[in-house]
Structure formats: C-alpha cells, structure tokens
Amino acid sequence: MYGEANITAARVLRFLRNLMRQLQKPLFIIWDRSQTHRAKCVARLLKRSDRIHPFFFPAYAPELNPVEMLWSYLKSNPLANLGAADANDLARTTRYHATRLRGRKSLLRSFLRATPLFSCLE
Image 1: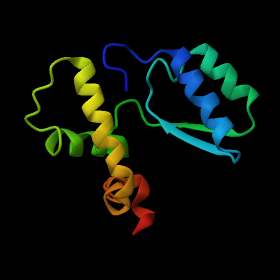
Image 2: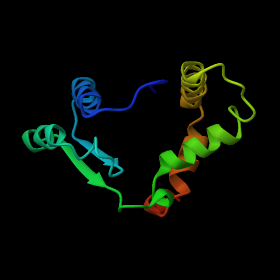
Image 3: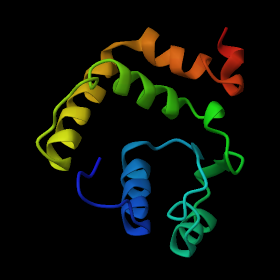
Image 4: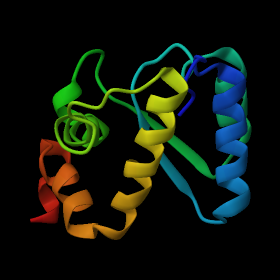
C-alpha cells in the first residue's frame, strides 16, 4: 500500500519479479483490468515467463474478486471511524490490520468463499 502514490506498471513489474524470486513454483495471478496490469512492459514480462499464468476478471465484476471482500471487512471493522491524520497514516494503519489477518485463516477463506469463483472450497 502506498499512501500518497499510485500503483504504476514499474511497481507491478517489481512485485512480479519479487514474487517469482520468492516462490519457485508456477504462479497463477488473478487480477482486475487495471491499466497497470495490462501495460506493455507487464505484458512483455508475462510473455517471457513460463511460470506466470495471468487471468483477468471480467471488465467490472467486483463480486468475483475476493480482495474486494477483504477491503470491505477492513473498512467496516478495524478501520471504521478511524480518524487518520493523512494518507500515509491511513496506509500504515491499513497495512497493520491487513498483516494481522494473516493469522486468521478461516476469515481469509471466507473472503474466497464469498465469491462464486471459489465455491469449490465448500
């Protein structure tokens, strides 16, 4: 999360390269149709890589994206009524609460189950 910055294609490339370095197995990336995800430099990296397999959500389908469920949870629970001093404070607090969710496997699975794409997890 970047408090006062936009996600750029360069940041997406850096993220994908770090992911490939950390995980040595094939990667199935499911993401939205953000311009940064469809940028030419990102497309070149994906074309060169035999390990990354991208899948895009339909043009507007937030109900299919489990990350939307995560954001909804954060906004209506730990971040509700938060009076952040600025965007960086909001990003820092959001990172803190999102990181704490790592230990809550059943809650994380519920975000997946809330979408029709992951109904096989039942």
